[in-house]
Image (cartoon, rainbow, N blue to C red; front, side):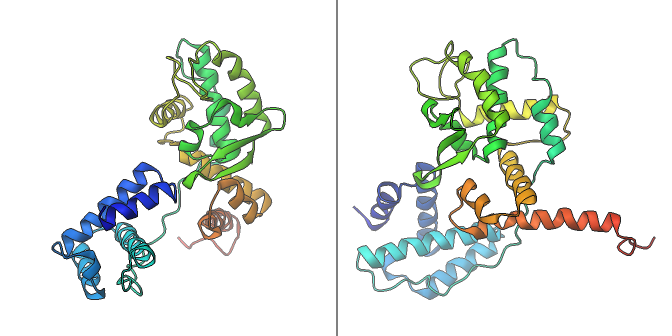
Length: 295
């Protein structure tokens, strides 16, 4: 087995990364081989890596994409030094250009209320409407990722205790609270699910009884947003962002939000403090007599 395949096997079997993520690493390492004219990876030095970065920058590659590729290369060499006897990591000390952090789009509490409290789009099937409402209430109530929602099984949610066991990135599990309205919506959906589910443990199923796909959840949410007249494209991650921002604005407890979101690093969660500051700055500009711009 060649070094790259051994590394990818390590990512899949030991680090338990998803097939999609492993494939992304494969692509990045193949790109490194292309950028260095097929020179054996064990023979690459810092100058070769710098040359590869220069070539990527000449292609107007986004700073975030460049950073991801350098991270993939660095991870491979870290593994190769520990497991494969490579002499050194040529990526050490090299830094990609900094990218401006884009703040995530969120929905206001009023927009969330319009989405979740309004009438469901006409489907001709009350079970699907109940399922959709339960899904979207749960996304907003507990800050789930789309894949986490789609991966939920029936036994993962406990209506009595009011919590759910979620499997996140790297197959790490966490327990999240489920709000009252989400519990009510789930309670309305579960009896209707019995007539649809066919030999599956999935919590949310399609009209044909199979586990609902992430893409189907996206399409249903977009339809609900249009029905609510929100005037913007709404995707599932916006409800996760809304959950984090609204909880942080009310509680100020960054660590608690980090735990509920399943972030490995609190620096990832800190983006929501910037969103909160944006809100405060807007209020200040509108309310303070000396903050108004001169016309």
